[in-house]
Length: 236
Length: 206
Image (cartoon, rainbow over all chains, first blue to last red; front, side, top):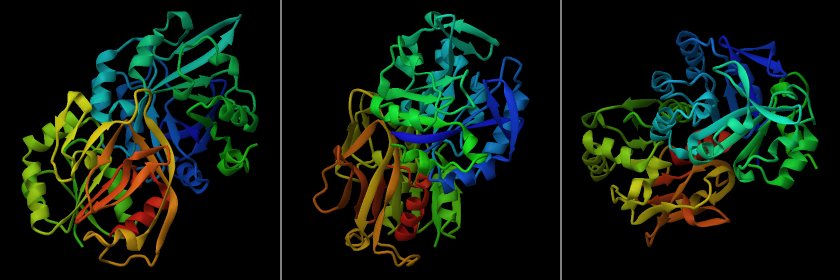
């Protein structure tokens, strides 16, 4: 099982968010990557936590920042990749895998197959910002700024086109040892292709190893506290 | 030393450049077949075998790669760039490849891809029995012992008689993770994203 970290990129700078909405500035992306690399972090997911009002110009400015990144750590990138024009900008970034969210919810097959052609199927990840409320499971549809019921999501479409699925617990993001494991119940994804994120702590990592998920992404709180990835790796 | 990185619009060129230049060796990005003039040519590769081979042939790169080898140059293929050195790949319904290596490429399993870190350990002397030995002695390291990052769905089945090869992992022993034969080196993992081990490896290769 891989142990990585999420890095949220907003307006060319990194931020930490809580509950998928409150943002706290962290600084420049290169410094954050340097820290994560020192910790031998297995992988980093750079996510732009954008909503429906994201513009192509904002996207392009963030891409310029990622393009300059010097890193020898595996990187996934996503957030606001909505058209083939966006996709063109992703070529020759220091990135191996692409993250799509709204594209999967909208079943934008043309875009995802275009990405598959450029990067390969192994590079395609689906991000589902997810929560339970009122006994129901909801997924945040970023480009529409609304939560939709999980029942309205075509799980088979995701299973067919995504190599891995990031379940991002939006309620517990920014906390530790509080990932909501019930989110995995009732969703027909193979556990081996699931990546969990949002509120992941050491106890969650123990459980993740038992459940044999593909990867865990720790919120980048390690940048604020003297946690280290190695500490998480040795969690028993 | 001259190092060319082939850019056919499919590959993580900036990461490869970053990896090589961390060893203080300058690189040149080449995007036309007639401009390949180097001691070491690197074939990066992401995407699928069908589209990659089509781009190679359309740009006459396949001929240029063979000429590079015939002129005594060294060739390094990474991930898909390694796979297309074999005779054929099962990907995209079957694709004829460059045939520089006796072997083929097949799906490593029917379920999901192989994404993760695996240990890599070998003795430098074992690799250097091939013609591809390092020429610039950037390191005195005798043993590489680290971990490397894989992200692939297809693997190379090596059928060469006399080659240096290490398996992808203990549970994927059929597929080559690191391959060296004559002046060709193939790497299935991503050395440019393998942190310290990637840096050690490039010092041993160059």
